[in-house]
Amino acid sequence: MTGSRALLVNRMIVSVHAVAIIGQPVFAGGYLSGDYDMLWPHRWGADVVSALGYAQVLAALVLWWVRGPRWLSVVSVLVAAGETVQYFAGLDGALDLHLPLGVALVTAMVLTTVAVWRPQVRRAAR
Ligand code: HEM
Image (tube, rainbow, N blue to C red; front, side, top):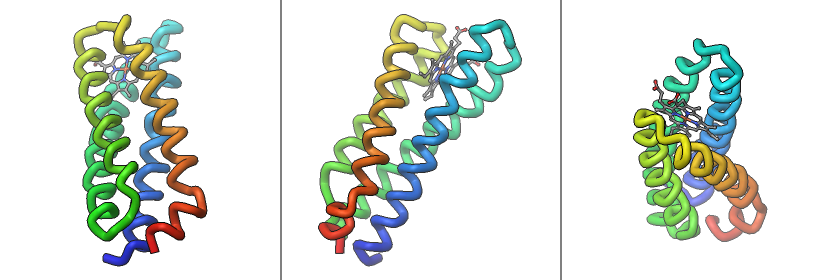
């Protein structure tokens, strides 16, 4: 796989992952406002977000392998680890951990999306 193709795949996964994780507080907000059915999309969203997090790690490692940037692998491993903790904190109802970690993960994914679409990253991955 060429560097530019690997970068495109990474940009797509990171972007979809960011959109999916932004949905999580939206569903959680509905649930906390009393619409208890919103826990279901949050539960499904948790599976989707986690799967995308692990896919992002694999894609980032491939990008690093083809001489792309290393930082995306480091960030992706940290985010995937955080999402794993987040998943079990959600199942445990440990909201004192789950809410701040959720905010941190959403912020991390928004920043990663901005960073991965910068033109400098494309030049470096050629
Ligand atoms: C800012 C982001 C997030 C907020 C505000 C949030 C909030 C919540 C809330 C209020 C609950 C219900 C807990 C309870 O009633 O005991 C919950 C459950 C849960 N959350 Fe989140 N969450 C967020 C992000 C995430 C993410 C990113 C994941 C997955 C990686 C996730 C996975 C789960 C799981 C698995 C549950 C348990 C669902 C169930 O019991 O069926 N959450 N979350």
